[in-house]
Length: 166
Image (cartoon, rainbow, N blue to C red; front, side, top):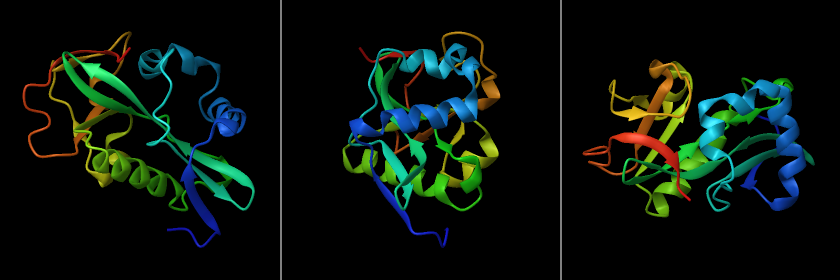
């Protein structure tokens, strides 16, 4: 964990411009074409499960969870997880992940899915979804589609198209 004066707080509506700026810097304009962004389009993130990281007054990181469905099963889509490049490798991403996952578990959610790097997310319990179990809109490398059950048995019977919850 970082020795910076770090605060992990629930995301507030006023944080949107700073979070959008972080997304733009980290992922560029091509981010809107990615499958995960297409699942989030038009669906607000769950405010009680989404967090920002602040160092003093500076917003330096963000993680959101957005409700989705996989087939007929409710789930959450994690991300985008983003940390300002000047503050990376200081434990901020993991602090954001842990805050969101703990809140989701306490709120009774069963399953979280993401598209990301398995070596990074495996450290917090994510694993690759078995081939063919879940499809996403648009092209995506199936080796990057991961999930983490929040309760035992949460992945049993879960299969199908991932889509917006609304």
